[in-house]
Each structure stands twice: as C-alpha cells, then as structure tokens.
Length: 110
Length: 112
Image (tube, rainbow over the protein chains, first blue to last red):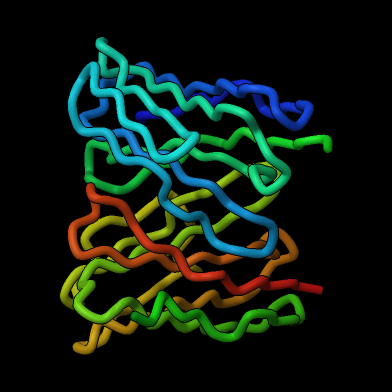
C-alpha cells in the first residue's frame, strides 16, 4: 500500500534553532497534510498542500509539496519550547483513507 | 464552535471484555474516521464513515467494528479485548476529508 516515511524519527534541538523534517512515499500523493500532536491530545492540522511545488507558510512554519508529488518538507524557524510535540505528515490513500506517517518527535531545549 | 468530543477519556478493561467508544463530530461534518495510536505503530486507520455508511476500512480484525448514526455521531466497538488493544483511540471528523480532519482528544484504553 501507500506508506509514508518520515524522517528523522526524533530531533533534539536548542531553542532558537531552525528545524527541518520530511516525508516521502513510493507512491504519488495529490494532497499533503502536516499535523502536530501535543502530549495527551489529538493531532492538530498545521498546513495543507494541494499542488506540486506549492510552498505554504503558517507563521514560523513552512511546508512544501515536492515536485515529484512523492515527498513533502516541513520547516520550523526560530524554534520555541511550545514547538515540542510529534509532527505527522498525512495524505489520502488510494481508497481515500487518510494515511499518516510514523511521526517526528521534536524536543526543544531552552 | 465545539470541537470533536470523545468519551470516555480513559478506560480500563479486562481481557475478554468488550468496549464501546463514542465520538461526536463537529456540527456539519459528515465524515468520521477512527484511528488507533500506539507508540510503536503510530496512527493506524481503523475505518471511515460517511452519512451512516462505512466508506473505508483499515487492516484490523473483525473484533473492531463501528457505526455512524443519522446525526453523524459515531461509535466504535472492540469485542474480546486483548492486551495488544491497549492504545489511544482517536476520532476525527471532516466536512471534506482532503481539506484535513479535526481530531478529538482521544480515548485511552488500557486492557489488563
């Protein structure tokens, strides 16, 4: 099936640093979604991408839809402690079921 | 506007029992999906309902079932609980799924 591979699995960074994570698939996706999950809560949608090459920002977050439609990137600039959490990429599978990557766990040290 | 509400938040059950989890979607959202989240497996898709019909089903055994009511509220049921069913069960609703789901806070199920 269509699997989403996220990397890195985890990141430990210093407050103020920039962060970059990505998501790849062996299959083409027509939509890429990025979510963040805080401890004890459900994931929250951060950014949605619908066109190859699309670059979208949401505050300090920027995400890009790869040209090949098989990858997407999420960047966080000037990280702060509240950026801590698990970041998931997601996209609709062949049956329109929403598939999620395994997540990137981000830790920000003050 | 009210978000996605899941009840209960926490549940402890014994192996062999059955459990029913409830989800109230955002008003106007007719698509409801359920996910199982475990530390080792991430978010695994269980099923999606739209207008009381199951549209998609993930790769889970028949012990996992669900339904959706005419008011879009949904329930999922797990019968003959196993220790491995311990997980956070997340419900999500959407008006149009490709525009993104809104998740509830989940029900944490512990099977002992």
